[in-house]
Length: 118
Image (cartoon, rainbow, N blue to C red; front, side, top):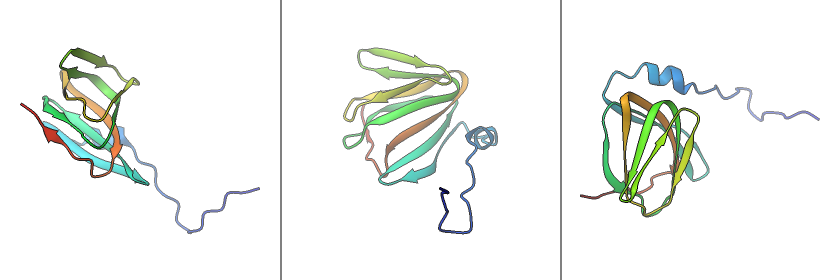
């Protein structure tokens, strides 16, 4: 039994490592792919992102490069390449690289609201 593609064009692979290597800005967050009502985003960061929460979506972080600190009001979690963490909806958090740079993928609802906090 074969899996036939209804179109004659196969979808191309996405290479986050190559895409992140081309980023020269101190912070870059872009959508890489979407599926149903969710989206995969890539974040390249050399500085922290402020306190925020997503009232309508969980957020999953998967680190590709560097070390990512995810800070919560009660402490922080350090993620290394290959590690991932789910941040439940409505939980305030902020992120920052440990060292010069981190690259991570985030998985969340497409068009998820972001509410910034002080």
